[in-house]
Length: 288
Image 1: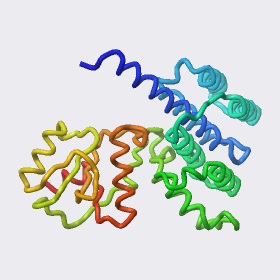
Image 2: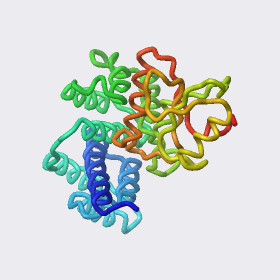
Image 3: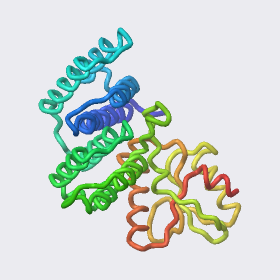
């Protein structure tokens, strides 16, 4: 049974992640100095899904204004300007003290999610993100910041073309898992970006690390399946493994979780040249 200390820690941790995500999303939404209807709807949907922010005064103020705006079923220019003003005020005055790099990672992912919410990427948004990253250079080697920095590098000294903006937007959506315009949901599944789908996969002799929570069973149960097929299972990610399989029930803020650190280490090993396969549970079960 989970004790109250652990429960309270998880609640505080989840609220902290939500607060930094909110701070980032608000910046992303108004990074071009405008707020459109798609971004408005994204904010409304996201706020209403955040149970950990129900007592956050800024979240309450935002929801109250959004509710008022939606009363007549229309969103006019004056209402959008009022909301933009409130968001700008929250960004300027919200007190958030960064105690660890994961706070900044959550804020950055929030910014990128806000920017990508309406499926439109503008020069002003790209410049805002570049400036934010330049203030946090110590994160450049941290995934997924490293992938964002690499993608933005060509545009630090020149304007982005229409084709490049579309490609960069697609990358942002992959990294954050943001698919609001396609699904109408703010639920995200960002790990599809880091996983691969090998055509040839033989369990015999492979060293596999399972991480996360699985639809197919407990950790021991999925390990037993792999072992029956000839694989050896390991608890930790290191150069002595060949494959990492990620459970389907992964949190959107995976990078701040214990299993998220395993995934991040696997990405770093793979990017450094170690022949490591990262795979989702869904694809792995399709190979059985």
